[in-house]
Length: 347
Image (cartoon, rainbow, N blue to C red; front, side, top):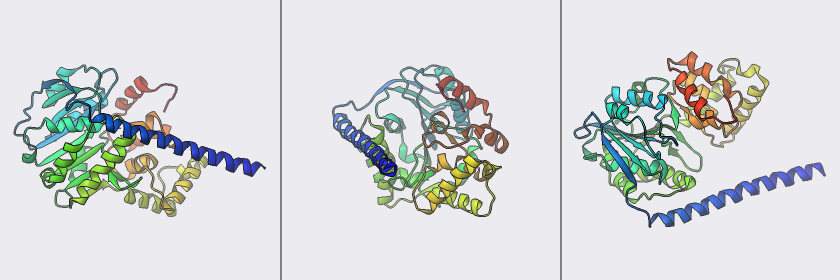
């Protein structure tokens, strides 16, 4: 009787997840239909920065969102690195208002504030549209504030992203639903920027108010559209590489720190090990976060990992020790933001 009840509860839970997913998908279709009645642009304000955008060879479109319109210290650190390595920055904020505009103008070529319609991809579209001569660029970077970092200097990451090896680069990839480059850090070289498929994707993109739609149709769809047109898309830190490295470390007994001495962590690693062996894709930036940072010099840690931990990764509270012992990054930049943003949770 007990086993029958357990099976019933499991099926009920799976059914609930399926139903919620279908409702969200249906909502996405309604939002897509509504997008045909939306405006062509949602830009509210724009300010020229101190660095000229015209004539720039490398441009970064950086997307920001904060309910209070604050540009936090960890974001300014990210922007300064982009500026220092030669990117002209188009800063696009989806915030209802924007403070500290003068400080942004010092390191950005253009500052835009728009309504939060279409989420990050809507902002990417309007940021790209603001670039005067897209085809004249050597490289275009799309980045956002959904990560903390760079924990390591960005020059090391960009050195991995040669135009001879790939036309489009992501910091990481994902195999969930379909292979794609994750959109928090995407680098497009000239071959991609001048490709008709690149222009067509952004021209056809609509301002849809559904995160599920954005992921399925735009984040996954961008990689799919570019690959179908013959462009080579690659991740600097591929999921398969991180997964294989973790499996090898477990097999050889060489796992970061004293992880296997803790029963909770040990059980988690064993579960991940079996999941990878079964071919089930995981979110590498969540499940392998510590291994990526400590052993592979991955320069980011996802904000939602620390703020929400949706996959219930155990022992996440040692993130600060991993970052401090592996990098020179000032973890106070993260702590100050967490202190302001977390509610009923600590890390």
